[in-house]
Image (tube, rainbow, N blue to C red; front, top):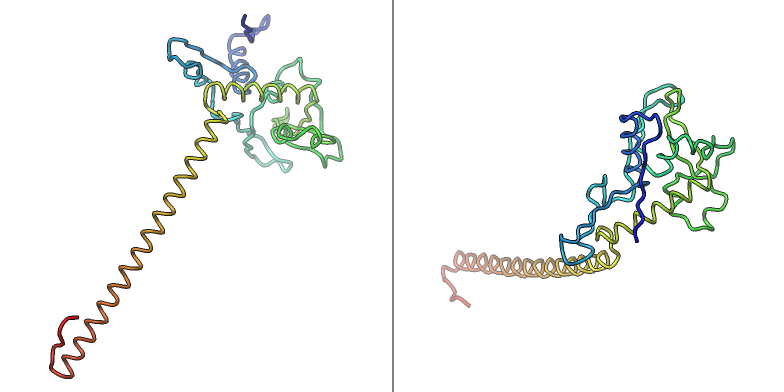
Length: 228
């Protein structure tokens, strides 16, 4: 059995608008694109491809918000583009986003919020930044429903990355071990070369002193001492 998740064009929705919405859905990891080609290789992970997705090696893509600050000056803000950002542009999710309360000491960017444990999330309000109708960049608090959806999408994307080998914990552990081993070997080689250079410098210094003393003896006595 298989499960296919499909983003459909709404009744009356123009093709250009649907394409824009579909692009945002893919950008937000709401609808990741996966290709499985069993003829590509004889290992499952090698047959699984995520390269059709934007920035497949990262957790989230980013978007640049162009708006104005409270003083009316133009600003640009780079924002991780999550499922919450996609949902904020969907009419059916409008009620899931609210303005921050007056006392907003516990506002947390939703990407940070998703990294918290359940205990750490208590009392915290996840928010996203959007361009408001007046062109200013505003914050909107995402509901628990949206936060849960973001968490589910993030978990799914993590799983897909592991399957495709982009973020496999075993591969990462092996890579880290090899990097540490290589770094240790490079450090040992560096120290060995430095010791050899110091010994060579000492030998050259001793030879230079001996030569200077020999010349001094010859100059003072006229006798050239035998080489030792």
